[in-house]
Amino acid sequence: RRATTANDRVTALLALNRSSSPHRREVLEQVYAAWHGHLTGYANYLRIVASGTCRDVFSMIAAEKNRLTFDITQPTWCRALFLPMAVNNKMVWTDQGIQWVTETVIELSPINATTASRLLNTFQHVASLKPTLQEKVRPALEEIVQRVPASLNPTIHGQATAYLGS
Image (cartoon, rainbow, N blue to C red):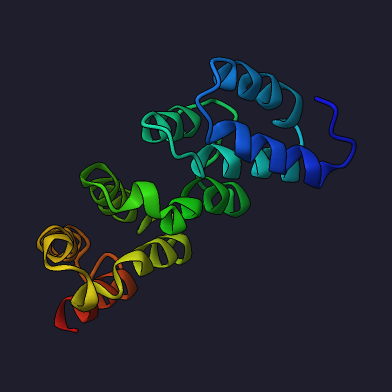
């Protein structure tokens, strides 16, 4: 609350969202109320939510996606809400994270192929993952190949197929 620059506010909120503070969700809701009316402010808020490392991060992302103010076709907001998870190593490599990436790539492929492709890059090094992770990621890639046929999105289909072949 005492941060004087936008960068300091965002950094403080990122730290708060990764903490166990009992006020975390309350403060984030206040920030949403203050920032959602501004393109970049809202994008920063969405990035903060999607960068969370607490167990509720996937439900928080889902809640943001379902807000009336969120437009999945708005490229800035779409990137902001979904792409931070691609580099969120603590959460993305869990069973829930792998399933989330799979479902999100499938959902985004007809809406925003660029964001879907960037999110799918999370699985690009499947061949060099630990065997226990490979056992989870390979079926996820197979599901993407099945549910996103080349006729629907040749880029995503081809990308997932290529990752399987590597």
